Image (tube, rainbow over all chains, first blue to last red; front, side, top):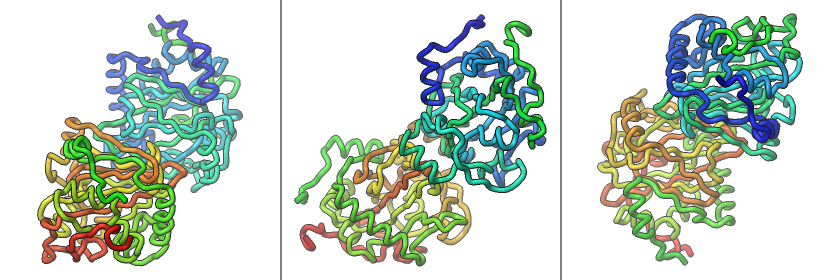
Length: 266
Length: 266
């Protein structure tokens, strides 16, 4: 069992300084095969939780899978993830958002520069950036299949200026994002901090801060780049439901602290 | 003077094996400043030689500048370039095509996987792939500003299958390319050869074969990535004008062998 799994002080330091941290090959191959099979089912499920690449029938992503799939419900409570989320947020946590980005070979499109917290704050009523995401690499992430690109340390600038595009929440999921960071702010951020695109084998986990500026380019390679993203929020930072604009599969209504899976289903 | 400039046998070997070769910092800073200023004038010139990014007023590129600008007419005859083009093509050469790709910060769009020779053969009537391009880095090329991506050794497969989109030649210049390599061929090529994205400082020169498969993704960075591309063709491989579909600023009509600039204007 890995009940005691924890990051080293140096890793925590790196996470706080840079706003992200990669752990290579956290999940073994057999578990990744099962997660990929389950992801494929979700992509094929159709319905409102599935987003398509603009003007195509290529799946861009699917949300809220942990509410419908037993395997994914167990994953968010995994002893490989949950203790780290609690350690980094220094609190009990719940899942605010769950998504799988497909980034299909030759088809996966751009994600403009943004901070996740902008969406969680403005659309979902999250009071503070006391949240983070764990990105699990469903495929190897390389230079060529559209890795996430971060501005290391950029989270410490807080929520920066954005260009706001359109009304409603539908375009919080599309290539032309509702809240993208404005060009002058990006100039400033990159001049100060540069850019980094973490890569790694399938089964790696990339932890990143609610406020870290990030983007990604299209997948120009012949291999898919699936990314499974679990957003953990501190239970003391639960959203104000009276301000929430998005449905439950995008913004949780259940704030019960998670208990590690090994204590219950294992 | 650099009249005697030549690649080493090892460099020629690398070029023949991989289908491309980078020479770092070939042009000094003061010459690059002059070339950039001239490129800016060309971008601002308007007219049919200037292509825009789809649905925007952002310049994507400009063609045929060597026919209109004295500085660019001199550049194609530069002793830094011409002797190398002659060495690699083992013949006297002329300029078949000249273009500057802007790849603007935040705006420069994708170039799908393609082989240049497909366009020169089908649109311009070039009989054999005895041509190459010199790409001069007008800006530093990094992982994040949309570098060219090559399949090393992929040129040895010859001209591969393409998906053909639309009629006429207008979309030989746009993001949705007329001749893009089909997905199955790209799978095969990348499985055998992998991918490489050469980077380097401003003033570097990247030589690449007429048949090497290449692409590029959008520029997600706050810095432009200008690339000046000169296509040299062997004088024994001149195009069949009766088959040429494109205007002179895209496909040369003058097959006079170039003489190095230092012999005349310097």
